[in-house]
Image 1 (tube, one colour):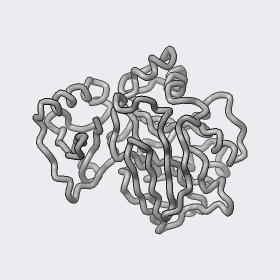
Image 2 (image 1 turned 30 degrees about the vertical axis):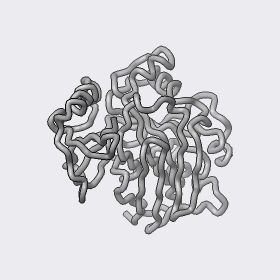
Image 3 (image 1 turned 60 degrees about the horizontal axis):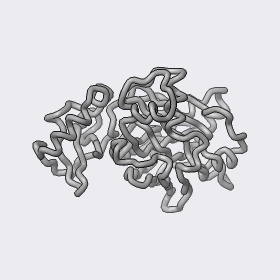
Image 4 (image 1 turned 180 degrees about the vertical axis):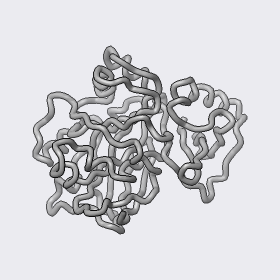
Length: 283
């Protein structure tokens, strides 16, 4: 299934996108797509309702697409997880996942405006595969156990401010947690639809110019390893989001470092997971 949330910010209603592109109202089954829904067998109940054709159809005209998961409890990010991205930034291949946290309040819809922070001169783009957790997880024992707790996958835009991130603090959070800095969606694709998360292409363009074109097979640490690894150090809760890293092609590693400016438009996509488009504006 493809799960999404439609409506104005703070007023989203849950929905399902069918294989033929129709949108069904999921509110008879759940008030929202959130950790409570994911962790209580909600997707299974919703699947039954879709099969029984008991959900009313929605007219998508004029409906904003919000983030597919209501505000996550936490966003966990893995940095430098593609070999080519580590190389373009001059970093060594990390022996263990580089882990940092991002403010869950950064999550916005996939087509919402993104704000360049006041004082920013180095706002950058990063297309990433997001993993959404569907069951409480601690001390997972290997890849198979990790796969069992994944609710699904989504496109994530891990927007970053490099000066804040790398020059203002020894930790990365300042450059990762600015408002609107994590567009997510357009939908949450349930894990059963993705045969192999290490077989997905990622794409990002700025003002129509291709900047990133990568593949999840080039991750240093694959999805299953990341989920299992993180569970050794923190409890993963339903609705938590894991950003799994970005391939080469960010402004930080390009000649002339062409950072984003107000008015720029970024388009990004992951095969099978949908696409995003944001115009940047000054905060």
